[in-house]
Length: 205
Image (cartoon, rainbow, N blue to C red):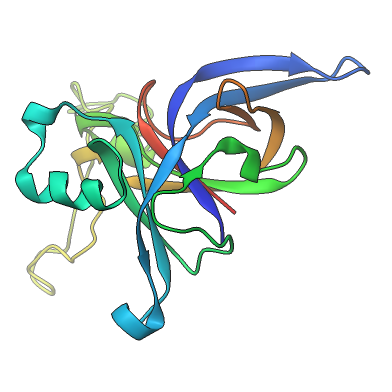
């Protein structure tokens, strides 16, 4: 596999020569620095560790400073590991957005927006009580019955109920690389990707 760490910039639309509109997400991908190279001989598996985004020195621990010093790079904010990296990279090398080409498909991993504590209608798509009748005051968005009485005498695990929504790790597969701006480290992918504007995302192939 190959991949890069990036930041979600926002969304836009582009038009093809025949007038077809495509919604796209702008991702500032890289440049990333190779901060560690793992091999099967030394670590038991092969992987490449990439670092992205500058970090203030006062917020960096001494262990992190020494780790980044081996790659001859200042402190970085985000560090991710990519297993079985298809590109041969050495410690301290830089990976930019030009590893992707226009037209290929990629997967984007990010953390979805947090929605807080939500009810069953928003969280699970329940329809609620459709028609009001006697004794149905303010029950349109209520969950209804959640279990049996005497037989089970409990609520089964996995019951869809109200709770925290969002903030999950989400992978969106099969997004098309529409355009690559190598000079600005921007990549345009079709569709939407998880996370808020400025969120960290991983683009991988």
